[in-house]
Image (cartoon, rainbow, N blue to C red; front, top):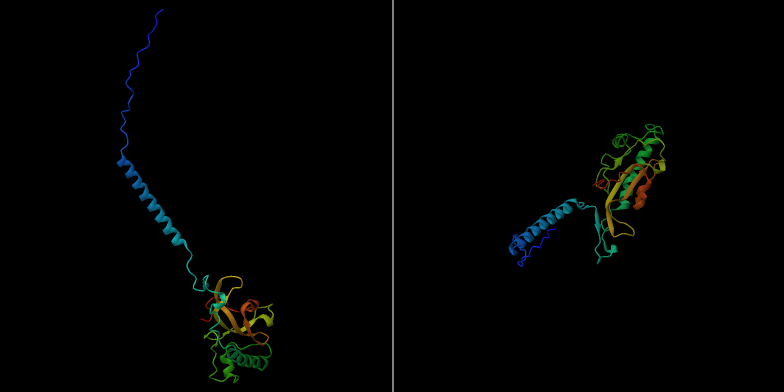
Amino acid sequence: MTTHEPKPVSPVPLVSNQPLPRRGNNLLLLFILACLAAVVGGGVWIWLDASRPEHDPHVTRWGREQSPHDFPYGNDKGDYEAAKARMQALADALNAYREGPMGGGVRWPSSFEELQMAGLLEQDFGFEGLLSGMPIAYQPEMPIGHDPERWVLCHDIEIGWRRQQGTGYAMKGPRAAVVMLADGTVKLLEGDELELYGGLNLQVGAGR
């Protein structure tokens, strides 16, 4: 039987022919990664900035050092008594028209000019609202099913700043209105009362 003698092991260690990475290559790789991170980060920042909601000019917030009571939201209120007096004069003429022979107890005039033609208002009577600075809104047709005591026939709305209770915000929008209701009465509505009556145009900017 033939025996095979083990081959002698070379004392020289095996050496890879693959060259070791150079330090310069590592620095270049790090530089490329840093550039990619900067590009990605810049893109994310631009996307976040573009998706940020636009500032609403009708909303403001008090700073930490400022008390909500210091906000001058009520300093530009209109003359409510004068506005009510003008609306009352208009309401008196409208009621007289409705209850007279032309209205027959059921019909309001189709426009304010009919009041002047009927001699119920002076020719130079101002139909501009003192709170809004715009013509007094008039809608003689009340939808079926509405309570006349809750339906606004004429309105003059004031736009201004209102504090929101329990928050640090003030909202710009309707805050008061002088109205004539379909039952013939005149009222001043303020704050949350505006939400309780039909026929009011409560869009921000109404009357401005």
